[in-house]
Image 1 (cartoon, helix red, strand yellow):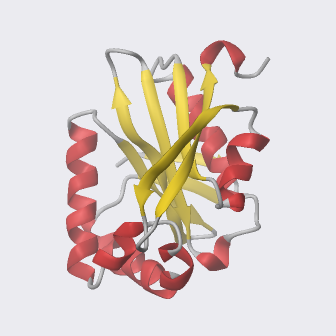
Image 2: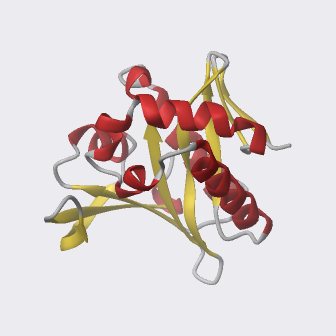
Length: 180
């Protein structure tokens, strides 16, 4: 089983089918908060939906197409993050993430994304890492901005979310820019 220590109270782990109950409870308890930005929340209505998600994550790992992990803070699953897309031909990875509402404001996501950046550049040999965020999602935008990502541009009306189009900001970081 994959685990990756981020700091003393925080680590990443490959989700197991047995994690479905905890991940679903976290999603359900943070539903109103997560729903603002994540359309999949409306389609996650029971533990079986989360089990199917975990199965797809494990399949994606096996095929080296994605690299998503559970975020464990002080022994509890606090969210999910990782590379939602890996393009091995172009050495490109796209990071996505979410945290349960009760876990925000503790520096968790910045530390997690920093760990994924290091892993992506040092272990996966990536040249470029991308993060895409809704323009109005200020908390999520703060993560790549804190970590030195460059804003490449805005994808206008890129996503349909809650009966309206949402603009998406594209951030990127090149391997040569990391830890300069």
